[in-house]
Image (tube, rainbow, N blue to C red; front, side):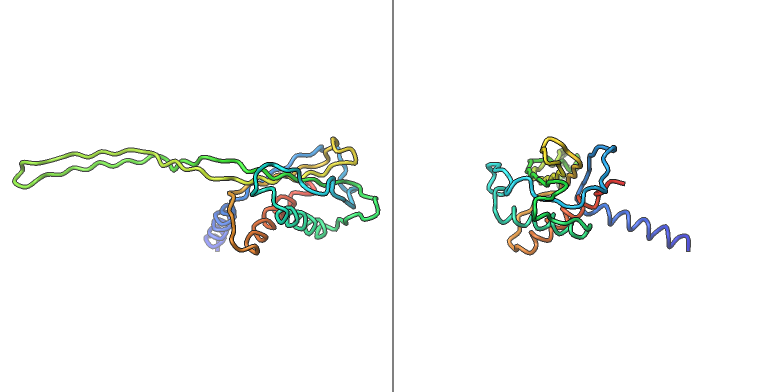
Amino acid sequence: MKNTWFWMVAMALVLGGCSGIRVNQDYDPSNHFGGLKSYDWASETQGMTGDPRIDNPLRDTRTRAAIEGQLKAKGLKKATDGSATFFLRYEYVLRMKIQSSGSGGSVGFGRGSHGRYGGIGLSTGTNVSDYDEESLTIDFVGSDPSVLYWRGTGAQRYAEYKDPDKAIKSLNKLVKKILDQFPPK
């Protein structure tokens, strides 16, 4: 029975580490998050970045819907009458990252016919590739936007999907993982 538990925990850790989403949060521990009951958006749209992959009205709508859906699941309500206790803003950033697969090498020896010909081959190298990483930051701010209550950030490898449903699913997963950190424990 002890072996079974060990392997179940080991597999959960391995599979849990495969999600590829890294999250973190920052907040002022003196804040009392229980007072944050209703929200509104600090602005109507995200600021333009100059990157058409981010400056996409569909992405903006999907991001806002994903955030609102997660907040609703936490019991927070969108204020429609100006009574918001905090305001939301978010920022997407794409950064190029470089990945190295480590170094490898090989050695080969050969000999020709009748012992006359021979050769030695040696190769070493490192495979280096680049990829885009998307980072989503979600801020809970006060009516004065310089007052930050809570910030959650998530990053993952960026992927362009031909199917909008896959893009929405990936975005929802990222937003959920970020907002799972709120309220701080």
